[in-house]
Image (cartoon, rainbow, N blue to C red; front, side, top):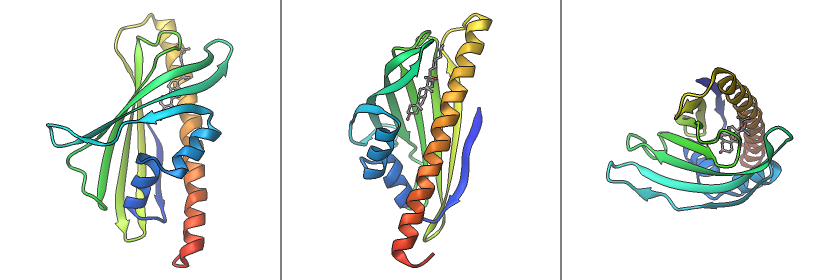
Length: 177
Ligand code: YK8
């Protein structure tokens, strides 16, 4: 896998969780810019295992002539029971893209860790892996891997940049920067 984001932000861990994992204005705006459309989400639901789960459905815009223009996707997020509100959150997100070529061969697993540093600081780590459900032919595998990494890198770079913008707005307002 790869570590795409590993950075301390000037906001509480709780704020970071709210931005990324609730129906926040931030996430709605970010999806708009990324041309991720028609997003719907279930609420967080308690699991028998003690963790929480929610499922998102949306359509991503790809516009790559080799791959297509759009694909529907399903993202299942699990908030681990070891998470502690305001202190430490670990979320695994499995993302299935249903309409790209070879979609039945692979999915993406994104792991988000939000760790409290102090009252107004937290560290965000985002770790990503491309997982295979079937063994593709070598050339197909390298095609999937290459396209997935470049798409993921672009997405998480952009997410990090938008979080830095949000951070700037938050610290400007509070005066405790
Ligand atoms: C989520 C991983 C692969 C996929 C894409 C497909 C390549 C197909 C390879 C063929 C387009 C928001 C990605 C990047 C689309 C976007 C997905 C996002 C960023 C040629 C064989 C969508 C996180 C996420 C996870 C997986 C990403 C896809 O919150 O290359």
